[in-house]
Image (cartoon, rainbow, N blue to C red; front, side):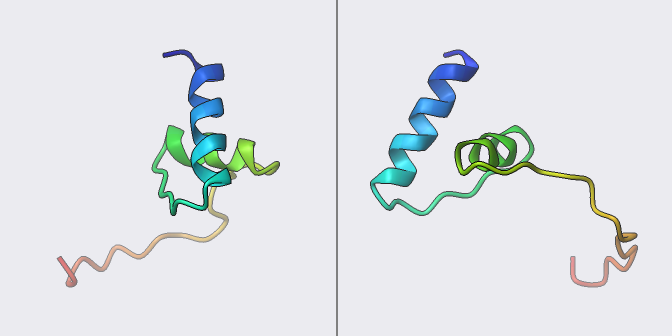
Length: 52
């Protein structure tokens, strides 16, 4: 499956009202389908891993 087919798939899923979660490329595809984009976080992430 190519990127265009992936975008069409994501679009169809969203149109049906199915909840979606995208990580990495998936997040970018969802954002693109919704007309926005994913950008780097401006804030430093916490190094606290006590929740693991």
